[in-house]
Image (tube, rainbow, N blue to C red):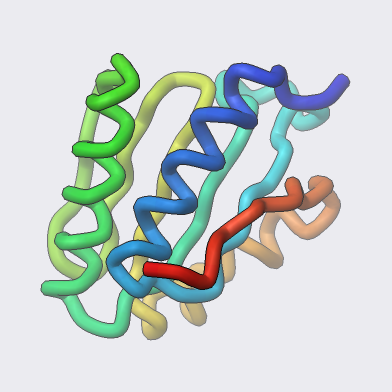
Length: 120
């Protein structure tokens, strides 16, 4: 089973928001086969704590514009998590991303293709 079209569309909006704030290493993992509550994990890196916060704020703003509200927001500074139930967005500094290696932890999950424009 793959992530629903609705969740894929929301993930795409979130990925564009990350890119707009110059987030890097943007990866979307399809978690549907893992029997988790969420369909997709979107993982991105910010260079500094300030950028991590700015990226998370932009994702929150862009998803709110399409009617999506997170059920919770956790963290501050080096790692911010936005939980939209079917989509969970993780924004981390490179140090924490390298330490926790969420990409590797879930490396058996398929990656979703994201269309991120070069124009920002």
